[in-house]
Amino acid sequence: MNKEFSQRLSSTEALELVQKDIHYLGQLAYAKRKALHQNRAYYIYNQHLNYTNICKNKCKFCAYYKDKTDKNSYTFSLEDIKKEINKRIREPIREIHIVGGLNPDLPLSYYEEMLSTIKALRPEAVIKAFTAVEIHFLAEKHQLSEEEVLLRLKKAGLSILPGGGAEVFAEKLRKKLCPEKISGQKWLEIHAKAHKLGIYTNCTLLFGHIESWEDRIKHLEALRDLQDQTRGFLCFIPLAYQPAHNELKAPGPDGIDFLKMIALSRLFLDNIPHIKTYWAFAGLKLSQVALYFGADDFDGTIVEEKIGHAAGADTPKGLTVEELKTYIRQAGFEPVNRNSFFEEVKN
Image (cartoon, rainbow, N blue to C red; front, side, top):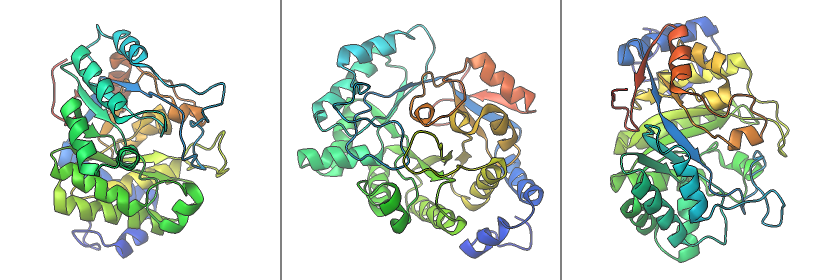
């Protein structure tokens, strides 16, 4: 870290940093990224599975959810899930990424059978599934502890929580953004429980809507504090708010704001090893630039991302491995094929 700042940034220093010239901020973040990861940029061969868009929470920023009575609502049966997995069964997919809405009609057994079915079809793939919001929903619905739900899902094949549902922890904002959703403190508690049970997780922040930099930094500080205690976070993902087709009507972050968020994340989260530029939300060209502002992970092939695209994301719904590698190389970095735990794997 530059000598004018502490080795570990305070919240006050972080707020001061983001007011500085973006090139200066980028230089600091790139130096930190290079010290941690050299010229490597990670990617993964993965598949997204959004099993239902029926959700009782109806968050203001979300364009994905539907009421049960909506003609565009859906819920995958187990046969549908098998079909989705089998569509790409000949591809060397290393991770199945699963999230969906809070569908009151789905029992815990549905989730267990979903995981065990996928694990039987894809024994070599890691299953990264369900947000803390979904875990709490299942625990409350079935009058179980969150630990019991996590253990049952782990037994069925769950390895990692993807980290969604954090949004922004500031309680006043959550009442405007997602009044039905669990609190930021509850999100942190569920992730702490997962870490204690040997389930690694990612963590996120939804930014570029009605929050301030102070709100963002407090959110990062809460993540850093939990990581000090558990060391269970693998990666931090700043999620750029997508402004179309939802009730919030905020403009979303511009390119400068996005790059500052990536850079500050790398500098502030000194105990979380990886920062992702999620190209499905940020765009491919901006994600290439983000690799120079502290990001080291380019995410993966995805196919087929639905949540961001429902809110107007104009990126491809998926990429081939060769396309991913080309984007990374064009940016001047070495593409590294990884698994869900950020261990290098051979192509």
